[in-house]
Image (cartoon, rainbow, N blue to C red; front, side, top):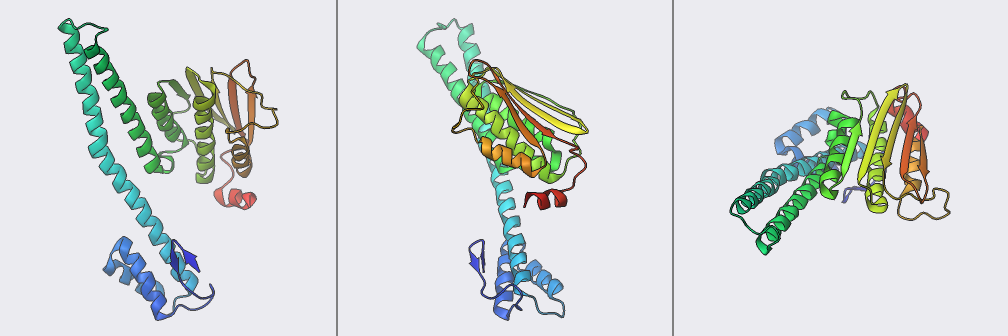
Length: 283
């Protein structure tokens, strides 16, 4: 039996031997410290001998906690150092540009062009860093909800791609299950990326409404495509449809090669089904 690179031999219903218990304690200690690991093992074991499956569950949980903490640590360090430095560089470059203009620098000269290029590069790097931080800290979705996560993802795309990306949605958190929030966010994210990669738009609009049924539309003003074409590569439509199926919803596409595209997600009675029922349906 192997998980997270660790192997413990024996069937899942067998009792764990002292060596397996020690291995679990070692794994836990890496995440929560030696003393806490011993207390946890003792409190779980009590007077009974731990089973191998119980040991592996503890190791899995500890590994997940350690991974999440490491991602948060990296996000904090990147934000405190690299992001702030890039932001300062952007402000400083703009200040130098303004000073050069006041001094009468040639607007088409090499100095002015160089400063403009430096500012663009710095802004682009800052946008990329913000996007990376968002990926390192996806708990925005779980802590603040679907709308907030979509707004932050849209903001990162807008800055990085120099696009207007507008999110029209309720300000309050929508009463959706965590499973539905996760699947919907991934579909919306894929739809926005498709707009950027394939449609060459100047504007993207994401609109969310919840009135019994949840409706999300991702629309762009770029170049469309034929949804009925037999082979549409690179759009990830099959995966998007499968995600919607798992949460009891539908994905519809309105597009044509000579027009724009609207991706429409519809989830009937979106707030009524809990995670356990959805996950059971998805199996």
